[in-house]
Image (cartoon, rainbow, N blue to C red; front, side):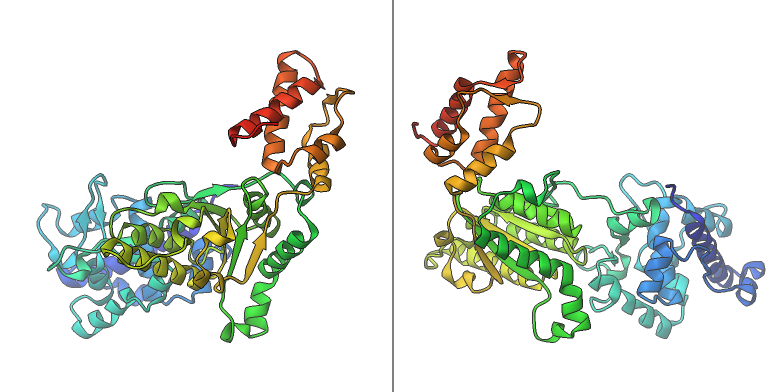
Amino acid sequence: MEQDTRNIADGLNFLKEIIQIQLGQNFNKKKWFQKKSELQGLRLKNDQDPLANLISFYQLSTEESIVLLMALVPHVVPHFFDALIAEVLPKGGEFPEFGGVKGTNHRGMIPTGETVLFILAGNDLEKRFKIQQLFSSEHLFAKNKILYLEEVKLGEPFLSGKLILDQDYIDLFTQGFISVPKLSSTFPAQYISTDQEWEDLVLNSATLNEILEIENWLKHKNVLLYEWGMQKSIKPGYNALFYGPPGTGKTMTAKLLGKYTQKPVFRIDLSRVVSKFIGETEKNLANLFDKAQNKDWILFFDEADAVFGKRTGVRDAHDKYANQEVSYLLQRIEDYQGLTILASNFKKNIDDAFLRRFNSIIYFPVPSKEDRLGMWHKAFPKQVELSPEIDLEKIAQKYELTGAHIMNIVHYSCLQALSKESKVIQYGDLMAGIKKEFMKEGKSI
């Protein structure tokens, strides 16, 4: 479905008239200044459009709506501000009152906080101070990570920073949806999903029941917190620790929780986030949590031992800062309003002081022989047959394998069958696959 552009077009026309009125006053252009008596408020045609929805949801004032439109302008009409300035300064020239800067690659003017003040307050000092509050840390723009002013060099006016609209809102207004962020140096997380169903994940009943408790929280948390008023007495988020040997279903469980509650899941490898450089870890984590704020994502922290491992005494500055990094991460996790899952191979690797912070601590054991048999039966595609020599019950009883091991073995066996132009899984190939999995861990069958 194509994005409806009528609201953006109407918004930009409204913004153009507001700017022309202010420029008309400044440059004594009566035809522009006279528009003030004729100007009507911002009227948007489609009340289901993302732009209209955001203005309505946050009940933005006219001034706040104008700032939002100004931040969007460079992304939809690059020459917008330059064309208006050219009308009052056809021969060029400086007009510092208007603010604005040039980008590195962008050829048009990018508005700054000074641009906002000129357009909304002109030279009215009292009104300028009032408008400046739109950029305070307490304003909804900052609290909800909608837009902000870029930091400037020490000694330069705060309001000379570029007016920046968060990329999520740029995508939402121009495409109608928010793009899934990609793993990068500034966003240390990767979107993960699955085509599998709960029935494909074999877990013991105790583990499964605890997982279902988390699913219930994800489905009903808004009622619990806001309709039943529990937000005053409990924290808005939910923290869980998944621990157990590799391949026992920790990551798959996180994916399925996201799939069945329609929430994106992002995996963060803490071993990649943690930096040897002081302050970099906090910066990496801040980027992540700032992006996740108000998104209701599921954050899955893999290899949590990298940060939450047992602590030793503070021997040097690096130990001191490492403890600060852990405290920072804990605070951000506790403030996060969605589900946070930390995964570890061993519960004993996690510092005891951190364990009490979790709402749930869930053990993922090596599957029992009954569970292994169920995994073997579910793992093979319907298109193949098993050689009569293969007795899955005996194999499940004899070899202690995880779900990940079994899938690797089935993968290997199927490829061997395909290479022989056959649909029959041979006993020898299956055993070779088992041997390969044991060898990976330095074991023999």
